[in-house]
Length: 306
Image (cartoon, rainbow, N blue to C red; front, side, top):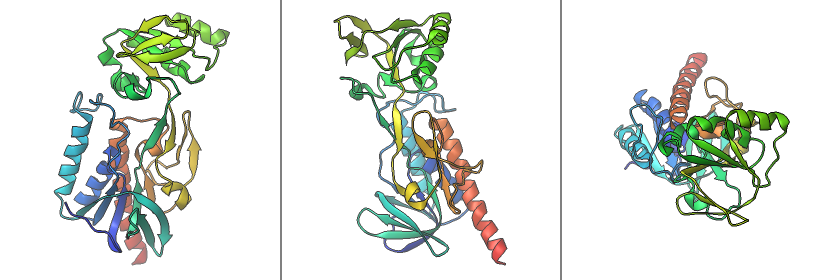
């Protein structure tokens, strides 16, 4: 494994080595640019055993997809890899300096940020340890495997209506309000049209595979649960650099244009940290766009200097 640390010069530094970062780095590697990937090794979907909905990889192990991507990327001699955390970033000269957790630093002409987001779950006993296994956030990623069984939607607010109205295409849905909100008349009518059952008794805990235990002692066995987590960007780097943010339905994300360029020249952002919602397929597509755009910006800079 190739690594460089103190004061190394790169064309592009990619911060984040999950699906989006790997995809961005691959485009740049194939453009024969000097690339450094800094990765702390904490994928957002690390709790999920299998990934679904990604063409040619449907049902593959999530970790294996990432591992294959790393191996393929590291076969390029112009790619270096640092298993580390990027602790800070700042503009310096015509590029950027990134400080690592050990105090070392690296410099690059461009930055691609792909650090992802962190999920925050409601404080329901038993939920966190089932996250990614029998409790999920994306029906397209995990709904089919529930085999049209009983599905619980654990409400975190009015946004949970979105889950409740989508999920009847995947099974029999119970919306567990859990004192998070009360549907209005129009929402109740929509739920009824979709055949959604309402449960107002609060949830005490989750047991077994996905069995909901209510505070009155009743038990509702479920094939799986869906929860709209809240999120925050996993690293402060974008904020340190002054990248503009947008407010999404579950948390802030970095604003980018259609080329995945942020509001800060030379900084490109991709993956879950740069969209309101995402999955592996979206992350890979975003990363490819960010990598290509970063490469084009280097060419344009050279042309302007000529």
